[in-house]
Image 1 (cartoon, rainbow, N blue to C red):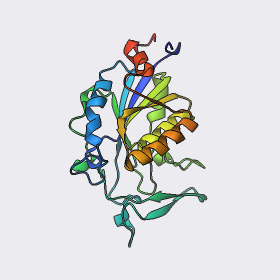
Image 2: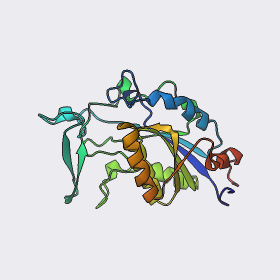
Image 3: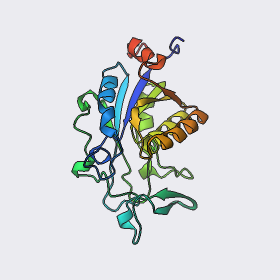
Image 4: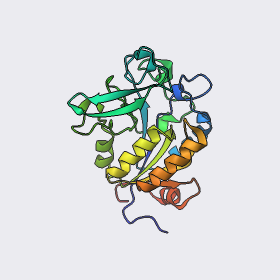
Length: 238
């Protein structure tokens, strides 16, 4: 199948940070460093825009179990309420302290070819809410301005039509970012080889099923969709 007539692809590299990578990350995703060579190869392709995202939490972030007396990471949850609308709330899992601004764990993995990136978008900066998606927190009625990034604006300004998502973790931030991308109107793909999940293969299988229901396509490095990128010039006339 040929590429869409109007094809302007972007690559989103989600949360490839030291705290999400073995062996020393406080919230290390199994196999996370294995995807770095694959991501670096993708960063060599002529994507119109290449953006990394980072969790960029304050020390008092609501997702840290240590900020909730008696809570334990991975097993405890908390309820997050929209500060502008007490009727809107959601339950979220609590985690170890991770990706705190100014700490080594917040840094992008040193193996990542960061010089090929056009921008880095920070998320999770508001201590009151969880923000898995690189676009916005799940509070939408109304949206919380401090938990909405400029990612959508960057993609629209570049007239991006297709968004390819890779990174960590497949069952959380990659999942939520891809879901929001599709909901906002971009043709959206997750490159399966360039993703690892907190919950391993079972969690990824559930994510794949959900993504397909939401219109996100799971693709592969040797698939036709990345072939379109390789064949594109990704210039203003594309």
